[in-house]
Length: 261
Length: 261
DNA sequence: CGTGACCTTGAAAGCCTTCAACTCGGGTGG
DNA sequence: CCACCCGAGTTGAAGGCTTTCAAGGTCACG
Image 1 (cartoon, rainbow over the protein chains, first blue to last red):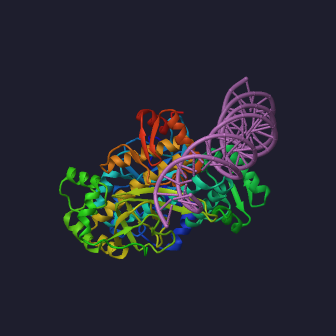
Image 2 (cartoon, protein in one colour):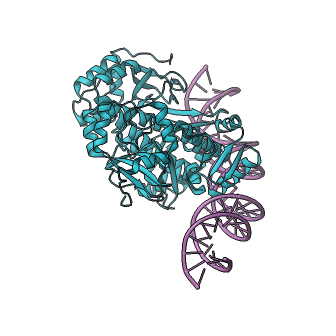
Image 3 (cartoon, rainbow over the protein chains, first blue to last red):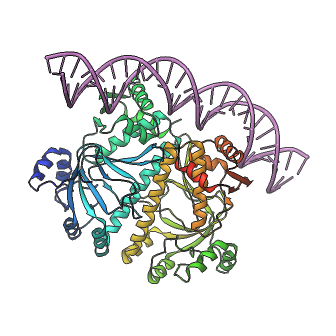
């Protein structure tokens, strides 16, 4: 957490310029309120559906920070005193078993909210995959704000329920899908995420390593690699390089992901 | 849903008498408000932390129903127009893949809340494992009530976050634990649930079939059965019959579940 | 007492993992 | 400038954990 620093206000426009997708979303949706330029990732960030008063109050308790690749936003077991809204970059969330086995719970991108917990401590670790920017909200002050603006709870509940549904979908993937189905489901999930954020559908960007993908899908890096190769050989996907995938036949992939026999 | 009928008011005391655990919890916590006698499963039901006004309002929109074994409370894909609080019995939640493979998302017991969704439709099926009673809250009227009593949202958010954390723990189980670790984790989860509801720790009651357990743990019924046999042979558990388990060495099981590999 | 659902156990097969070798690209220091 | 190293990724071969296939057992129920 000590590797985070606040960007100067002057940097904002430069940052926004680097993030074409965010600007696209902003333009598409017009001038809605947002606590800061960074948070201006409409529809997805938790300010969506809030009114200007609420957003303004939120902006007052918020601080901005950037996180370097491999640095943690927070770690499992630490006191959960901050919730964060990612404004650019990519983050992985994971838990560890006693002997070091790792399960990645999910990946989060611009507009996503992380660090909300029921208990006192974070129940997972959040780590940046690349240069990442976040808006940080102190939990104490956030809770005070929630007392004043009850609608914030409603919004957080919506987000929490959506996250729960996505996590339950992931249970199906881990418990009942084959390696191929897992990898295909993963690619489609990333593609859908890009569309939701207003980014181009293709190429599908993979900011995470094969090891991260493996720990997300409950596989080994070798199986992930082999499955990519297999899909490529079958003409179902094309790899520009190891981090950019293009999809040939979307319908075919959708069928595989759904487990059509 | 048509297999549910409302019990007559006169049945309530008889029902309560059958549910020793609920009475125990009630006595322990004293006279807190609850929408109905059935909902009187303190600490766990969603009325906990609400004040009498809120609970009274909730009781007015609530109807009670009983569900027979194998009958569905609701099905995946149906319009999600009711949320429910289980007051007795046991329920399994599951999703299906196109070819029929099933993943059980979790089991729910007295005091648990089911059917809350972000979208319009249920994203999973809920089916009774045994005779089950529920309090049903029409979504529309519930949402109106949430507008009036904002604290309900706060309570629902708490429940949602707890459920999310539990589901994330299940991701670790499905993605990274061995068959033995899965079964042991499952038994401890059930044991903890019984304690939380004020029931005796032992024997651990298994109201679900081996097939249900398998589909919850991402295994086959044969592997589940073999793993039970293995644990029994090692003296780590004892099976009174197929549905009642006793634990010899709790610490040893905790270590196995945590993956002290 | 037959029937069926559920559970257990054995043996063979298979999917994924483990172990191992090799490639590729980037960073570094001589 | 380039040899060297290291992390990340790919591919092959062997092994193992779990599944699949198969058979038998138990118990509730009509």
